[in-house]
Length: 249
Image (tube, rainbow, N blue to C red; front, top):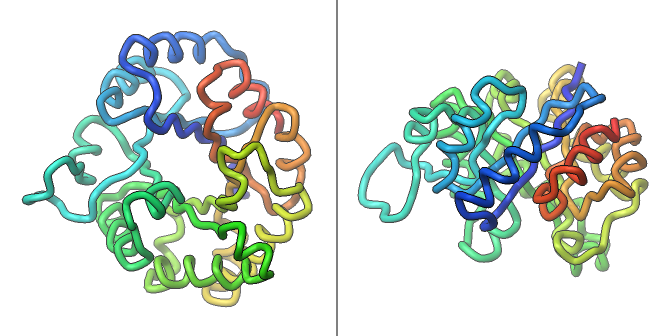
Protein backbone atom coordinates (compact mmCIF):
# COMPACT_ATOMS: atom_id res chain seq x y z
CA UNK A 1 0.00 0.00 0.00
CA UNK A 2 1.31 3.44 -0.91
CA UNK A 3 2.37 5.76 1.88
CA UNK A 4 0.58 9.01 2.55
CA UNK A 5 3.24 11.72 2.86
CA UNK A 6 3.09 15.40 3.77
CA UNK A 7 6.42 17.21 3.42
CA UNK A 8 6.95 20.84 4.42
CA UNK A 9 9.50 22.69 2.29
CA UNK A 10 10.58 25.72 4.34
CA UNK A 11 12.68 27.12 1.46
CA UNK A 12 14.88 30.10 2.48
CA UNK A 13 12.89 30.94 5.59
CA UNK A 14 13.55 30.89 9.36
CA UNK A 15 16.79 31.67 11.15
CA UNK A 16 17.82 29.50 14.11
CA UNK A 17 15.53 31.06 16.77
CA UNK A 18 12.60 31.00 14.33
CA UNK A 19 13.37 27.37 13.49
CA UNK A 20 13.45 26.40 17.15
CA UNK A 21 10.14 28.17 17.75
CA UNK A 22 8.44 26.45 14.81
CA UNK A 23 9.77 23.06 15.90
CA UNK A 24 8.31 23.66 19.35
CA UNK A 25 4.97 24.58 17.84
CA UNK A 26 4.99 21.52 15.58
CA UNK A 27 5.48 19.24 18.57
CA UNK A 28 2.38 20.69 20.22
CA UNK A 29 0.16 19.53 17.37
CA UNK A 30 -1.90 16.35 17.40
CA UNK A 31 -1.79 14.02 14.41
CA UNK A 32 -4.92 12.04 13.60
CA UNK A 33 -3.92 10.73 10.17
CA UNK A 34 -1.56 7.96 9.10
CA UNK A 35 0.54 10.33 6.98
CA UNK A 36 4.31 10.30 7.10
CA UNK A 37 5.39 13.83 8.08
CA UNK A 38 8.58 15.54 6.89
CA UNK A 39 10.06 19.03 7.15
CA UNK A 40 12.89 20.56 5.12
CA UNK A 41 14.59 23.45 6.96
CA UNK A 42 17.50 25.42 5.55
CA UNK A 43 20.94 23.79 5.51
CA UNK A 44 22.17 25.92 8.44
CA UNK A 45 19.40 24.54 10.67
CA UNK A 46 19.27 20.91 9.57
CA UNK A 47 21.38 19.60 12.44
CA UNK A 48 19.45 21.54 15.07
CA UNK A 49 16.16 20.32 13.63
CA UNK A 50 17.39 16.74 13.46
CA UNK A 51 18.59 16.83 17.07
CA UNK A 52 15.32 18.40 18.26
CA UNK A 53 13.23 15.76 16.47
CA UNK A 54 15.52 12.76 16.93
CA UNK A 55 12.99 10.95 19.11
CA UNK A 56 9.92 12.24 17.26
CA UNK A 57 7.97 10.91 14.28
CA UNK A 58 8.69 13.98 12.10
CA UNK A 59 11.50 13.32 9.63
CA UNK A 60 13.96 16.12 8.85
CA UNK A 61 14.92 16.19 5.17
CA UNK A 62 17.12 18.32 2.89
CA UNK A 63 16.02 20.77 0.20
CA UNK A 64 18.81 19.94 -2.25
CA UNK A 65 22.23 18.33 -2.70
CA UNK A 66 25.06 18.11 -5.22
CA UNK A 67 25.71 15.06 -7.37
CA UNK A 68 29.44 14.90 -6.51
CA UNK A 69 30.72 13.16 -3.41
CA UNK A 70 33.24 15.93 -2.74
CA UNK A 71 35.47 18.38 -4.59
CA UNK A 72 35.80 21.99 -5.72
CA UNK A 73 32.10 22.89 -5.57
CA UNK A 74 32.00 25.96 -3.34
CA UNK A 75 28.79 26.29 -1.38
CA UNK A 76 27.50 22.81 -2.21
CA UNK A 77 26.52 19.86 0.02
CA UNK A 78 26.97 16.17 -0.79
CA UNK A 79 24.80 13.18 0.02
CA UNK A 80 27.38 11.76 2.44
CA UNK A 81 27.50 15.07 4.30
CA UNK A 82 23.74 14.96 4.76
CA UNK A 83 23.83 11.35 5.89
CA UNK A 84 26.55 12.16 8.42
CA UNK A 85 24.08 14.35 10.33
CA UNK A 86 21.23 11.87 10.08
CA UNK A 87 19.44 13.13 6.96
CA UNK A 88 18.08 10.28 4.83
CA UNK A 89 15.73 12.04 2.38
CA UNK A 90 16.34 14.88 -0.07
CA UNK A 91 14.14 17.00 -2.33
CA UNK A 92 15.50 17.20 -5.89
CA UNK A 93 14.35 19.09 -8.96
CA UNK A 94 12.12 21.68 -7.31
CA UNK A 95 10.85 24.18 -9.87
CA UNK A 96 12.73 27.01 -8.17
CA UNK A 97 15.99 25.09 -8.51
CA UNK A 98 15.23 24.51 -12.19
CA UNK A 99 14.25 28.15 -12.81
CA UNK A 100 16.81 30.05 -10.73
CA UNK A 101 19.81 27.71 -10.79
CA UNK A 102 19.47 26.21 -14.25
CA UNK A 103 19.07 22.64 -13.08
CA UNK A 104 18.37 20.35 -16.02
CA UNK A 105 16.96 16.86 -16.44
CA UNK A 106 20.52 15.68 -17.09
CA UNK A 107 22.01 17.19 -13.93
CA UNK A 108 19.05 15.98 -11.90
CA UNK A 109 19.56 12.43 -13.17
CA UNK A 110 23.08 12.59 -11.74
CA UNK A 111 21.74 13.90 -8.42
CA UNK A 112 19.18 11.11 -8.24
CA UNK A 113 21.94 8.57 -8.92
CA UNK A 114 24.07 10.07 -6.15
CA UNK A 115 21.21 9.99 -3.66
CA UNK A 116 20.36 6.38 -4.46
CA UNK A 117 24.02 5.35 -4.31
CA UNK A 118 24.04 6.72 -0.77
CA UNK A 119 20.82 4.89 0.17
CA UNK A 120 18.90 8.15 0.42
CA UNK A 121 15.24 8.55 -0.45
CA UNK A 122 14.48 11.16 -3.11
CA UNK A 123 11.43 13.37 -3.46
CA UNK A 124 11.71 14.13 -7.16
CA UNK A 125 9.86 17.25 -8.35
CA UNK A 126 8.61 18.15 -11.82
CA UNK A 127 5.79 20.08 -13.44
CA UNK A 128 4.70 22.34 -16.26
CA UNK A 129 4.61 26.12 -16.56
CA UNK A 130 1.54 28.16 -17.39
CA UNK A 131 2.23 28.34 -21.13
CA UNK A 132 2.52 24.55 -21.25
CA UNK A 133 -0.86 24.18 -19.59
CA UNK A 134 -2.49 26.78 -21.86
CA UNK A 135 -1.08 25.11 -24.97
CA UNK A 136 -2.23 21.71 -23.68
CA UNK A 137 1.37 20.52 -23.77
CA UNK A 138 1.49 19.85 -20.03
CA UNK A 139 1.43 16.06 -20.23
CA UNK A 140 4.28 15.98 -22.76
CA UNK A 141 6.40 18.28 -20.57
CA UNK A 142 5.85 16.19 -17.46
CA UNK A 143 6.46 12.94 -19.31
CA UNK A 144 9.74 14.30 -20.67
CA UNK A 145 10.95 15.46 -17.25
CA UNK A 146 10.23 12.07 -15.71
CA UNK A 147 11.72 10.02 -18.53
CA UNK A 148 14.88 12.11 -18.91
CA UNK A 149 15.75 12.11 -15.21
CA UNK A 150 14.45 8.74 -13.98
CA UNK A 151 13.93 6.20 -16.74
CA UNK A 152 17.57 5.08 -16.78
CA UNK A 153 16.90 3.51 -13.36
CA UNK A 154 16.12 -0.10 -12.62
CA UNK A 155 12.64 -0.81 -11.28
CA UNK A 156 13.98 -1.61 -7.82
CA UNK A 157 15.24 1.97 -7.44
CA UNK A 158 11.69 3.27 -7.18
CA UNK A 159 11.46 1.87 -3.66
CA UNK A 160 13.45 4.96 -2.68
CA UNK A 161 11.72 7.51 -4.90
CA UNK A 162 8.71 9.69 -4.15
CA UNK A 163 7.35 11.79 -7.00
CA UNK A 164 6.07 15.33 -6.52
CA UNK A 165 4.00 16.96 -9.24
CA UNK A 166 4.11 20.72 -8.93
CA UNK A 167 2.39 22.81 -11.58
CA UNK A 168 4.72 25.81 -11.67
CA UNK A 169 1.83 28.18 -12.31
CA UNK A 170 0.31 27.18 -8.95
CA UNK A 171 3.36 27.68 -6.69
CA UNK A 172 3.29 30.76 -4.52
CA UNK A 173 0.68 32.37 -6.76
CA UNK A 174 -2.42 31.52 -4.78
CA UNK A 175 -3.59 29.56 -7.81
CA UNK A 176 -4.21 25.86 -7.33
CA UNK A 177 -4.90 23.15 -9.81
CA UNK A 178 -8.43 21.88 -9.26
CA UNK A 179 -8.65 18.50 -7.53
CA UNK A 180 -9.75 17.09 -10.88
CA UNK A 181 -6.71 18.57 -12.67
CA UNK A 182 -4.43 17.17 -9.98
CA UNK A 183 -6.01 13.73 -10.24
CA UNK A 184 -5.83 13.71 -14.03
CA UNK A 185 -2.12 14.51 -13.99
CA UNK A 186 -1.33 12.09 -11.17
CA UNK A 187 -3.14 9.32 -13.05
CA UNK A 188 -1.15 10.20 -16.18
CA UNK A 189 2.10 10.07 -14.19
CA UNK A 190 1.20 6.67 -12.78
CA UNK A 191 0.35 5.38 -16.27
CA UNK A 192 3.71 6.69 -17.54
CA UNK A 193 5.44 4.67 -14.83
CA UNK A 194 3.32 1.62 -15.58
CA UNK A 195 4.13 1.72 -19.28
CA UNK A 196 7.85 1.56 -18.44
CA UNK A 197 8.04 -0.50 -15.26
CA UNK A 198 4.69 -2.25 -14.92
CA UNK A 199 1.69 -1.79 -12.65
CA UNK A 200 3.36 -3.15 -9.51
CA UNK A 201 5.96 -0.37 -9.52
CA UNK A 202 3.51 2.31 -10.61
CA UNK A 203 1.03 1.37 -7.89
CA UNK A 204 3.72 1.39 -5.19
CA UNK A 205 5.15 4.88 -5.80
CA UNK A 206 3.71 7.76 -3.77
CA UNK A 207 2.92 10.82 -5.89
CA UNK A 208 2.59 14.11 -4.03
CA UNK A 209 0.87 17.28 -5.19
CA UNK A 210 2.74 20.55 -4.69
CA UNK A 211 0.96 23.75 -5.56
CA UNK A 212 -0.58 26.05 -2.94
CA UNK A 213 -2.08 23.31 -0.79
CA UNK A 214 -3.87 24.86 2.19
CA UNK A 215 -6.05 23.61 5.06
CA UNK A 216 -9.11 24.64 3.09
CA UNK A 217 -8.40 22.56 -0.01
CA UNK A 218 -6.21 19.71 1.26
CA UNK A 219 -9.00 17.25 2.06
CA UNK A 220 -10.54 17.47 -1.41
CA UNK A 221 -7.16 17.21 -3.16
CA UNK A 222 -5.97 14.32 -0.96
CA UNK A 223 -9.28 12.56 -1.51
CA UNK A 224 -8.39 11.82 -5.13
CA UNK A 225 -7.28 8.22 -5.71
CA UNK A 226 -3.87 8.95 -7.24
CA UNK A 227 -2.89 11.83 -4.92
CA UNK A 228 -0.84 10.40 -2.06
CA UNK A 229 0.05 13.59 -0.22
CA UNK A 230 1.54 17.01 -0.61
CA UNK A 231 4.77 18.96 -0.86
CA UNK A 232 3.80 22.05 1.12
CA UNK A 233 5.44 25.47 0.85
CA UNK A 234 4.08 28.52 2.62
CA UNK A 235 1.52 26.69 4.74
CA UNK A 236 4.29 24.57 6.29
CA UNK A 237 5.64 27.66 8.07
CA UNK A 238 2.59 27.70 10.34
CA UNK A 239 2.36 24.69 12.63
CA UNK A 240 -1.45 24.68 12.94
CA UNK A 241 -1.98 25.07 9.19
CA UNK A 242 0.60 22.38 8.43
CA UNK A 243 -1.04 19.85 10.72
CA UNK A 244 -4.47 20.73 9.43
CA UNK A 245 -3.11 19.59 6.06
CA UNK A 246 -1.47 16.49 7.57
CA UNK A 247 -4.78 15.56 9.20
CA UNK A 248 -6.73 16.08 5.96
CA UNK A 249 -6.26 12.37 5.19
